[in-house]
Image 1 (cartoon, helix red, strand yellow):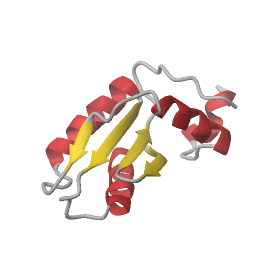
Image 2 (cartoon, one colour):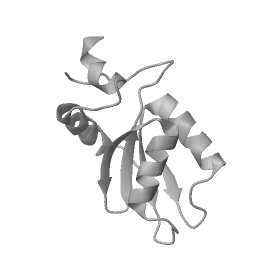
Image 3 (cartoon, helix red, strand yellow):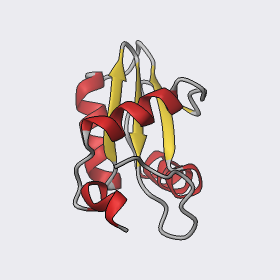
Image 4 (cartoon, one colour):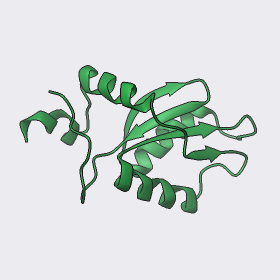
Length: 107
């Protein structure tokens, strides 16, 4: 239980964030956000995806009305997820599954 102490308290260590970034390189974006922006349906789908996968990558299209940094922070807050990485038009969120944890974070 000690090895996820920081994550449980809402903060990832730099080592944990680096580990998750490496994992994120291997996954594709499973959501796109465009001019529709953030809505209840998107939040519900992302919530379900985070519960199932723990790590999700999102692509923000050029026609999105909000700035990508604002979308990144807003979704992390709404979903109680950790901000892992923001590069260009993509970002990665992490949240430990309550029912079926799969990712073992390093100390």
